[in-house]
Length: 480
Image (cartoon, rainbow, N blue to C red; front, side, top):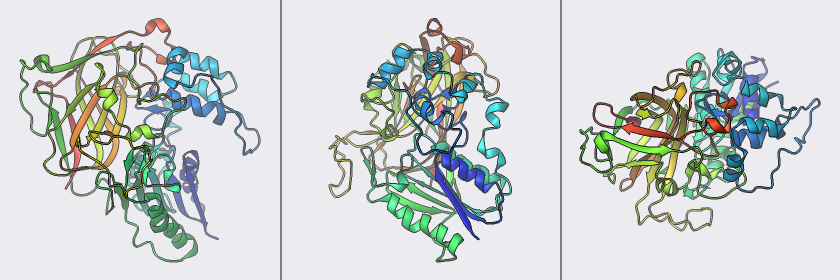
């Protein structure tokens, strides 16, 4: 007998675990958007920041006790408020969510007892078992998967490192969570010039299982890394990921507030950059929304949303390059290296990588889209964003307070990118300290946030330094 296993999301985690069983009949496994590490990058937390909205909308239903197998998860928590920004702000500190959820959801209350990356979390990291993996593996994920983009990239990387003899391949397309099993021609307002999901199913998924389970056809056309590059809208077949010919280049915020691969000394006379820093006031009572519109549930589309709304707020810094004279392709993880000073003892940092379209940009009418006729001229497409809880900057196990107003390095990795910024476009970076209600609010005080009360939340002045000595930069994986 030959057995294959695949699953999406939590069943993606089950698929990873099935592969580790070493059962002799198990020949082909495809973990798709696999839940991997709920503290570092998937679902419940990103870099130690609690993704309270995702958790609270998902777990009251999913986490109910199920003593017997069932197809019915039942109802989750319901509210009459159709505006999630209002609901979560009104609910207040995350300890209040624990009261709303009740006593039967055991995991929710356990999570609150483990605010740092301790042994309890590490035991739930699916990467720890990825050694001596015997089946052929096909890791699948979405570049714009709000839930488990991180898990797909990083499970594959762990398997490559820890089980190098395994026949392991990766597919990443321009998809939301599970979109590879649906229509794949567009994501939000961004279009991909063809049904990418159908391409994947016909050319990768079906041939993979046919070959390993039925001995039919061939897998010669399935590369080690099968990656769709947005911007240029093109599948690339690569021998490894990140690709061989990637050069990691520093992109600097210069004194004039522009982004450049050339570092210049700051000009203290520039009105926007007093003495080589940019600053904003982060106020947890008025957090930066993660998207412009009003919704009751978190949207899938925020991963490619237009960021113009955010750049118009005083608590969001925006820096961009000049219009590009050549295409710029990024392939791999981005490293944010912030030099920051904060007036309090903790803060969060959100870094967004954005593709700014030309003012006269329009899609070809033949390209399938969402039929919303959104104005794409000057569109600021979110390509990748990630948040970091400042107190974890040196260790997820042992958080450390900031010394107020002391210039401090905050370095962290954003999940991998596969995107081409076309000639005439600009690359923009936005920096902010709230991303609500996607991420829970940091009181901006060094305390256990799961126990924080209303009175603990305070404003913080955040400075991002770019004076040539204390130089904020972003390490980009430039693909030649």
